Length: 318
Ligand code: MEV
Image 1 (cartoon, rainbow, N blue to C red):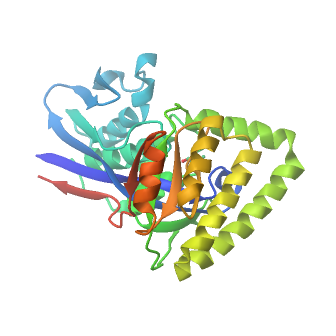
Image 2 (cartoon, rainbow, N blue to C red):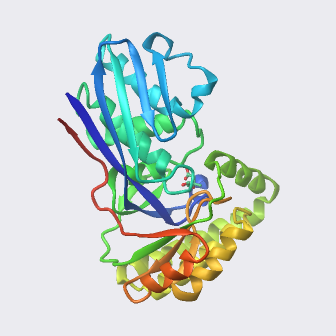
């Protein structure tokens, strides 16, 4: 029997970083997925095959993995949890296939944690999405202790949502009809490092950071109204204003700022998405300016268009 699960990547429309300090974020999942396929094997090993590497480890060594396996920690955590919960003395083979490049701010790490949690736990028992989410967040915390949990939430439930650390997620039932152009700066980044830099910035600039949080909150209230009305012109302007705040907390780079300036020439608005310090920018478009924005950005970067995914996590046993 194979247990197959796929979870979408995500973009953050508003509120990255500020969400870690209690502010609401608005995000959506996108139509690019990660699929995890697991099966039970007789050999007492966990075997992982993925684009970011292949790993084999004895089930007896799961509590003490080698440092070279650090990137695989979330998946080893999930495998250990599944074996403990089921009480079975078996091995597990996990294959991960991704349409989302790693480390570019599109939620590949969260989507992987969600897909692997659903697939591996599903070998023994099909869990409700709420429980998959809980395990996925625990797994992601093995490599990124301070995650707000926003990314895993949207990768699990899909669609457009608001999220805050206190109350979790709330679906946004908007008729918003937009496309996004996503451009990759090709600058690698590590979310946990960028989040740590922002923590230091806040420590040294407490009042300023508090005023940015207030501004971000107001901006998000307005964005929710624009989403409700599907008013893309005002939504785009708000995204560009959000970018100004992200620049003030030093998570932009020259390359990202350049791509955003270019994107703003033809789209409704543009900003970094996710941690920043590299990774991707998103530009808000509809049918009227999608092609123009794509061809404009293609001249400077690797880019593609994406739509909102409304399915979230999908999992089955074959
Ligand atoms: C990363 O996609 C989003 C951040 O806000 C971190 C988090 O929410 O965990 C930068």
